[in-house]
Amino acid sequence: MRGTLRIAISSLGLMVLAACAGTQLDQAERTTPGGTAYDRDLYAGYVDLSKNEYDEGDYRDSDTFAMRAMQAAQGDGVEPEPISARNLPGDTVPELSAARDRLVAAQATGAAARKPQDAVEAQIAFDCWMQEQEENRQPGDIAGCRDRFMIAMAALEEQPPVAAAPPPPAPEPVPGPVTVLFDFDKADLSVDARTVLADMIEAANKSDFDMINVSGFTDLVGGDAYNEVLSEQRANAVIDFLVESGVERQKIFGQGFGKADPVVPVETPEIRNRRVEIVFER
Image (cartoon, rainbow, N blue to C red; front, side):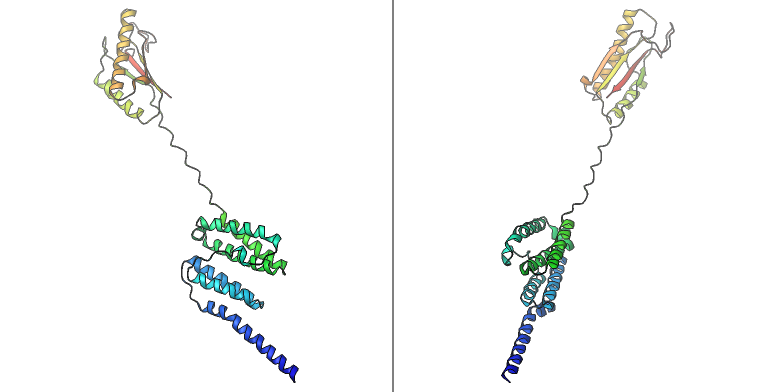
């Protein structure tokens, strides 16, 4: 009779203990989570951990996870479990400490906002790993939580590919060789010549050039010395126009070639020979 009574009392005590242990889980499940999507997902993850431990009869850890779930539901910024919270085998502490530091570092860079699902999975897996490692009885469960953590962290730390900077826009091509023509025995610029030069300068301003070569020529009428001076005067007329239009003088090289290199080799006046050629160089 006494033995039967003891068994009954013992069974009743276990039932009471189980009922008390489930109080935190019950309360957590009745909690309506608030906060951000990250907080709500973290709450759900801790509730799942609490249920798993409750089903295994580990009511202490079930309560621990249930209370962490309720903290997350309030948006309290629940951090990964501290290493000191668990009585861990000494040889496992370095790896778990490094893992926690890695997770905390990722969180510090805004991981919860950037990749909330991966951040939640990493923290839940870490706390699961800590709990299983403290028990140190189920290698498969320890490895499972650890693997979950490593996979989640790899996703959390993965950086989006950096888009290659677009190449700088290619400079506009320099204007092609430009020729302006002169009246017989003249070195002043005609209206047409000024129009051609103005258009050339507008195009040049959009390009990147290093040097402008300005070469003056005459036709084959008259003496060599006279035409040499006249060709230089024509080149200088163009140079003056370029400088007045904003072209840097040090970028211009000018020279007169007199009667050399005629376009049309005739001894009579020929406008095509009375010219200045402008060539841009890069």
